[in-house]
Image (cartoon, rainbow, N blue to C red; front, side, top):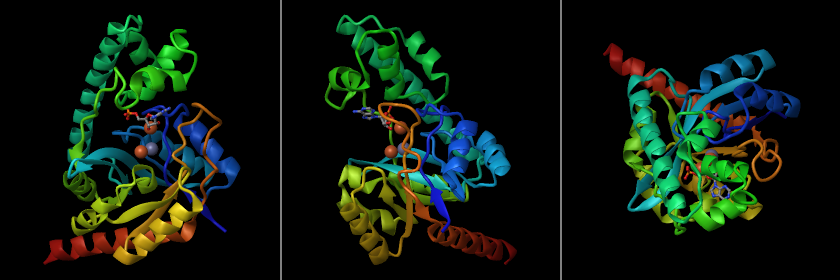
Length: 283
Ligand code: AMP
Ligand code: FE
Ligand code: FE
Ligand code: ZN
């Protein structure tokens, strides 16, 4: 059997692995295909393409966007993206700037509580254009200001805690359009984490291509539930570990093994769409 992991992060967002390390783990675990889905970034895709090529792994360029519909947050995965698409890069870079500003806001809120963290320490540790809460948490641990990541999130960073700053979100419809115009497939990430199934019909109407049925934090029952929803709405089925490298526990890569037949279905849909576009262009 061939397997894939279609949800992975590197240090180009809040993961800790380099693309080369990630591809190395994929090779060790025998994956036939891997996707990179860094938050608001496709920057790691170039190195991941080379690393996967060398390891004989099929690479799917992707990203993970934060979106909302009807005031409900969701994460949108984009797959088979043209990572040079200008509109995609322009929009992503806007969200990266918002993320950088958000670091300053979170640090200011933490300082207000008398905890002397500096934004510079966070940026130095993050060393990427797409920093987030995990970088603030790691900087707090590194500076000895909290004992561990859990404490950082519990005291400061979790929703409702004093240094929680909401993230800028694009509308889900805009997010899917952005993914589509970059040649990609738009997929709802880890629906079982958010438990907001009521938004699914509207997303399907707006052209959503798939749903992430298999995820580290989905129980077997949860995966089954979303497989049924996928069937009902004729959605592609995806899955991945959502590995962030070494964070609280050992790396999650290997915990989800998506049968490769689902990747074939994704590729069939992409080829069909591209053929339609070509046909329309020629008319
Ligand atoms: P952000 O995109 O900046 O809002 O950060 C979200 C990321 O923080 C998620 O992708 C997780 O990797 C991580 N995260 C969220 N909640 C926790 C938590 N309680 N403990 C550790 N990491 C968390
Ligand atoms: Fe993350
Ligand atoms: Fe996510
Ligand atoms: Zn993720």
